Image 1 (cartoon, rainbow, N blue to C red):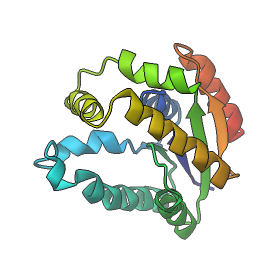
Image 2 (tube, helix red, strand yellow):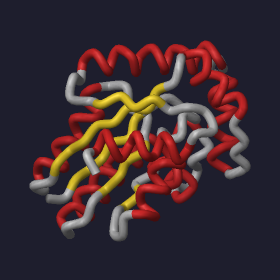
Image 3 (tube, one colour):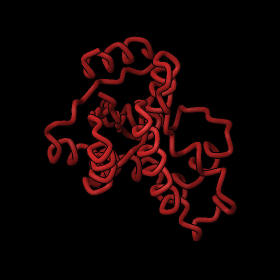
Length: 181
C-alpha cells in the first residue's frame, strides 16, 4: 500500500532535511517540499500574489498523481489547521493510500532558537527569514509552535517525534520507528 507521510513541525526543526534523507533512501518517493516550489511561480516574493494559496492545490495534485502511480509521498510542511491536513489526508484516501502524520518537536525555546541559528542561503531561505522578521520574529515563531501543540491535541493519530538539534541520524531513526519501518 502506498502512503502519504505528512512531516509537520515548526520552521527549522528539520522537516526538509529528514524528508530529503527519506526520499534519498527510499527509491521512488516524492519529496513534496512545497517551499521548493515557490520560486517556480512568477512574483513569488510579493506577498500580494498569495503564492501559498496557489501552490497548495498544485501540491495536492502532485501528491494525488504520484500516489496514483503507486509511489509514496513525503510532505515536509508546517500545517497548523486541521482542514489543511485533512485535504492531504483525503488525497491519500482517494488514491487508496495510507496517511501517516508525524510532528517533529523540540522544546519551544529551542524550536524558536533553531530558526534564528539556521543558515539557508537559498532564495526561499532569505525570503522566509525576512517574512518571519517582518511579522514578529521570535514571537511569531512561538505562536506557530503553540498552534502546533494545539493541533497535537486535535489530531490524536499524529505521532510526535522529538527532534534534537544536530542529531539528524538519531531523529531520522526515530522517524522510521514512528512509521513502523
